[in-house]
Image: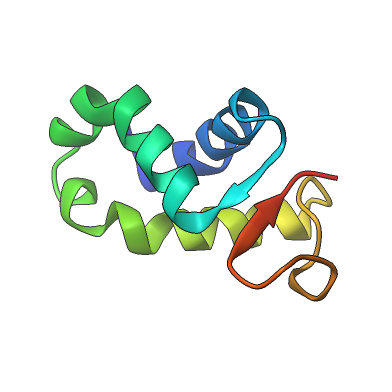
Amino acid sequence: MTKHDLPKKLELVLKLIGGKGTIVEVCKVFWDKYEDELRNSGDLFYTWQYDIRWAATELRKDKIMKPVELCERGVWELI
């Protein structure tokens, strides 16, 4: 797994949890689903929680996730 795989995987995790979740909830499910891949991803293992926020920004740019101003604080939501 690389940083560039994160947006698609984040989108899948959000779909798994019903399209919406707190950042903590999303990260817990992401870890549960992708732990083995993260552990074998080199430096990404140490930066994934930062990089997942970058992935959320990418999904917002692509109009897959709602903009920050349209969501509750600390909640990520698909459009």
